[in-house]
Image: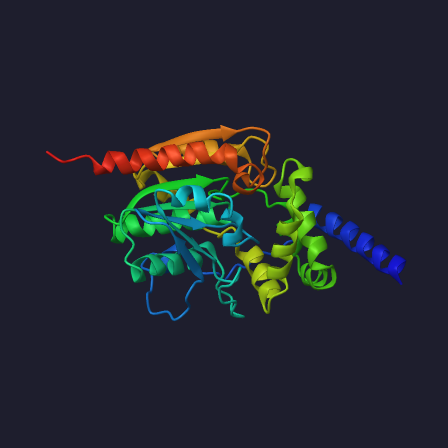
Length: 320
């Protein structure tokens, strides 16, 4: 019985690899684009799970695809020494609601995060976004620049989606009809999570069992797999190239942090983003994978703390 199950896994993974390479992923084409979201709607009763610790100017941390606020566990306490650190779980992830609808795009997530910011009266705000959550952070910042420019002080983007790109194989698999749902509902959650983390980490030996267990538990929550599959199909908006035309108008101080070895969102995306964001600084890290805040937080923290401190001190200077 055990050997049959192992063989089933091997067969599924081989099929997945073959299909992912042949471009069988099907992205949702009916997902509303930026034009429909440009004026965000606040009449919504979906509330994102969140936590807050520390005092001072608020720093909002937005996690990436398949993750949750847990991904920030190593940076929360150090930042909370000077700031009010707020973590949220995006719709469909962690402890947030996971409705069985078709609204899991970056723009929908950004609308919900913007509503969270307004509902909680967050001011002098610093937004930090990673990967898919970095795409959300970009859209939120563009929302705020247009409607509430006085609320946000700075932006930090980490290995984030920003332009049309080749999808990572694991996203292609999830977005492939029949195969994606079959795999996600058949393979053990811990197996799926560990396989994904091997792509996220540069050094697989640094993957902690606690992280595997935590993310596997999240994946086992009701409707979590539905949310992951739907998000995968909507992860790159069809009008992303057009949306990127907004970037040169985003003038808030921005720190862009990228891994040279990132296998999921290539460094070329970060370099292009740096060229298009007029008030940005690019920091490139080596010997770390897609999620530096999890794999090597000590590499990230000095850059993050220095940037936040610089923005706080700069804006706190008396006006003459």
